[in-house]
Image 1 (cartoon, rainbow, N blue to C red):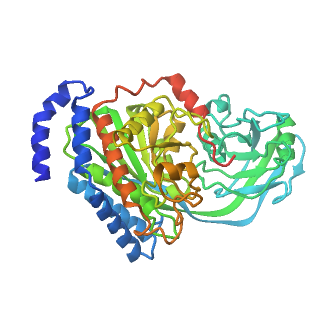
Image 2: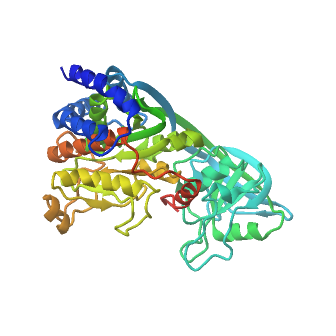
Length: 502
């Protein structure tokens, strides 16, 4: 019966959707209210039950690289195909295993000879692929001497590599942005090898072992102490031999991407949630809750005559470094990125000791990372307006880089979403607003075996699923609140990309 009703509404509304702009009280409002009524917490719970059953049948986990993940992928893809979506499985790679077979080599070969000491002066960046290259070193936007506090942006932007000669070894200074971002940019610029050295302030001089979870530069890479980097930078025409002897084995999982039948492909609204759990448990709150919620929303709105293309993404490998969303965004051309007008992220939306947290798009909280790209503030405001209709409070949460919005923000795509808390401790102020227990984690089973079907709050799950439905439906018909994206805004967003390990 539900599909018959929707089909009738679609038949009546499709001509209007194609011809008329959305507005307050228009199609966006009509379909948002309809979708909120259709989306049921009980249906979301059925998907969670299915994910729990998958984990139970597969050693208690749905982690990347396990049969439990593959079964979760097949479940979600099957539901989406049945609902009528065009479903794509996008392969992504992750490190299955890495072994260093012998110590690395870093030798200055010209204009003079010098041997640096492995595992003292420098260490292999895990998981560096094997490689043996002799080439001239070229510094990348170095800050030497270093400033009293960390300020180096060496390698953080593609523009830092303007003038870099492909085939040389990139010499990059630690600081400001993630190691992985520096390495990725160097790989794109054509570096034949990569030396990252410590920045140089007190406490940031020595080399040490690091696992950055990235390998896609495809060239040998090491982390050196400040003295090594400073010496190479000061040596005109420095040529080095850089060798890494390792065995890197990559595994493959799939992102699940589903697109609506209708909608303008030049204006894409994305909603995403990561599908994988940690190895320790079934991941029902983290992040079965987000997965099940957007899956229910997708099923219920499958026949909506949306004005803008709607794309649902279920990410692989989030728990091991945002790999699914990162590789997805990296695979897009600039034109394809420009078509994505908003990205909505839903990672943990049913925490037992929950708070309704919205990503702080305008940085009004003044905590941690800066504001998101232009449009992020408007996403936060629209989500907040939904909770306001139910007289429910919300609080902000920082774009701290711990979920799949990170790669979207880094390329200037407006982002936002809902989060109910992880291992952080609920404050007394939050307990007064939302109930629950102050001084206790939002989710005491975060990343543990006890993150089971018993580890969700049904009220939060139901409310947040409705909020997701409301936001997706409104943007599916009306993007007028999102400011046009400019090249300058994209450059600024990239420059403010969220820092992880730096």
